[in-house]
Image 1 (cartoon, helix red, strand yellow):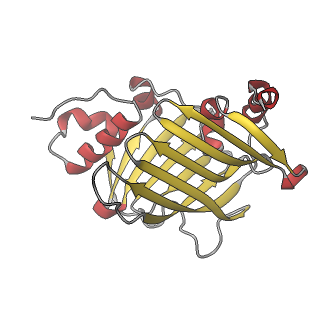
Image 2 (spheres, helix red, strand yellow):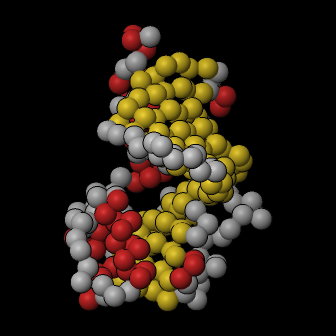
Length: 229
C-alpha cells in the first residue's frame, strides 16, 4: 500500500475548492479509560456542523463555537456557553493578539487540512458523489482513522484515539444544504445572553466563564498556561 500512501493524493483534498454550504449532524461518543480503573460508560452526544461562505459553526450542546468572516475577509469568533448564558467574543484584533492563524478552508472541512495531509491513504471506493477515502495515521499523541467524503469535504466517520485512554468517535448521521427544521439555529438561544470581550480577560480572572474559555484557549494552544491567584 505504500505506493498509495502519499501526500500528493491527500494534498488534493486540502487544495480542493472551498466546500459548498452544508449542515451536518454527527453522533459522537466519548470514552475515557485509565489503567487499573473500570471502564466508564461512553458518553453520547449530538453535534451539529454548519458552514457557508460567511459562517462556520460547531454546536456541541452546551457549547457553541462560531466563526464569522466579513466581506473584507476579516475573521472573528464567538464561544457560547449555554449553561452559563454567556457569549465570549474574539474580535479579529484579539485573534491576532493571541497569534491565532485562522485557516478558513480547514475550518470548513471539520478536520484540519494539515492533519489530513499527514494521514496515509489506505484506499478509495466509489466515484463522484459516492466516493469515499479511507485514511489513517498518527499525529503526536493521537491515532486518527478517517472515512472521508470528498464530495462533501467532510468525514463520514472519524475516530481519535489519544494516548492515555481517551477515544472520540464521530459518525455522520444526516446532511442537508441548510439546517433541517428541528435542528438548532445559530444565535437564537443565545440572543439575550451576556457578552464578554476576550480582550478583557486579564481583568476578569475571578469569572468562571473566563476561566472556562481560557482553559479551552490553552487546549487549542492560543494561550500559555498560567495560574490564577
